[in-house]
Amino acid sequence: MNGFENNEEASQEEYPATMLDASGGATLGSAEISAISKNGYKLLKENKIAEAVECFSSILKIDQNNNYALVGMGDASRKKGDCQAAANYYRRCLDHHPENSYALFGLADCYKTLDMFEKAIEVWEQYLKHDSKNITVLTRVANAYRKVRDFKNAKAVFLRVLEMEADNPYAIIGLGHLNYDFKEYKEALFYWEKMLASNSENVDIRVLTSIGNCHRKLKTFNDGIPFFEKVLCKEPDNFYAAFGLADCYRGLKQQDRALEYWNRILVLDPRNKVILTRAGDAYRSLGDLDKAQHYYERALDVEFDMYAVLGLAIIAKVQKKFGDAITSLKRLAQQDPKNHRICIELADCLIKTGDKPGAVAVLEEFQRTGARNSHVAEMLDRL
Image (tube, rainbow, N blue to C red; front, side, top):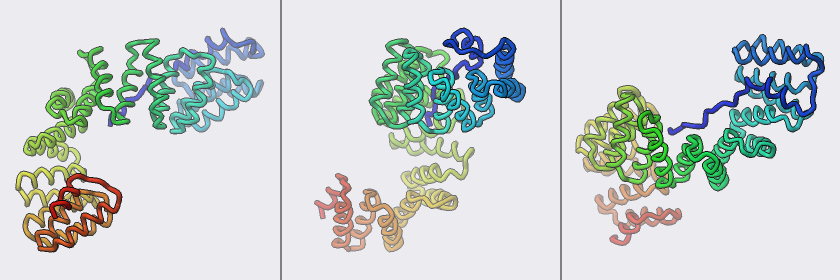
């Protein structure tokens, strides 16, 4: 949900002038080929991809390993969204010009787009041997480490960026995401609040939802509510803010307020089974069993949902239809034997029917799975 990544693009359009000034001794062969190359990059900048390809292709007919033309063809393929073809051109360039920084950058970015993060890291690390202080590349490396769940290296690279540029937004955002991913919510909150402090007037709404979500995870629900409300003031139909508010009110046991926002989401997304089930839970908590049943059944009309079935079983238990409840709960327990809520509800139903040994057996079976839950343990002790 907080998919707010480093979207900074490398200035590939600058390649021709830069590369011609720092060609490392390589030559294009002639002034004419140089002019064609410059024109190709100019056309790329103007988004005239087909014409640019014609320029680069004409160079490759004369010099099949020309680094400018190969990088240009790679850039053109990337602009067309064909990262596989682009990667082939960049690799071909690197076969003959292994230290070409633009081919390295382009290839790494292709791997990132293709979700081949390990390969992207390998190429970016190679790039950094020649340009160790390139902040754009460093933030991309750090984000790639985050994608492969390498907390230590991701954090080290982000912090390295902040040593070079204390207010770099991509590093701050990256550290926020990184800590959130690894459930370090207090640390994540520190970075998101830092981002807010640096731009409180025009802060991105994703920063606001991220701060709200940290409070939601920390169960400081009252502190999270104002951030989600600010988002809804700017974007009344924002799903994440409405969900965050509903979940905060749910955490505060204010189910009537939570329902306002569950139903607000359902106006826009009436077949969202998760929200339908949450709304069913809220109505059940408020004692409106008919509406709760209606929402659970709507969720099951969309697709099987374990929590909707659990909700219906709990309603059956409240209505003293213990046989129906036990049948449903036993099926759920087979599907998810480590779910303590199912275990407790099933044991409670068995107790209510006078089957104390059956309840004990259910609780002991849960513990044999290796799962640990204090409520299950307490219930077993009482029995």
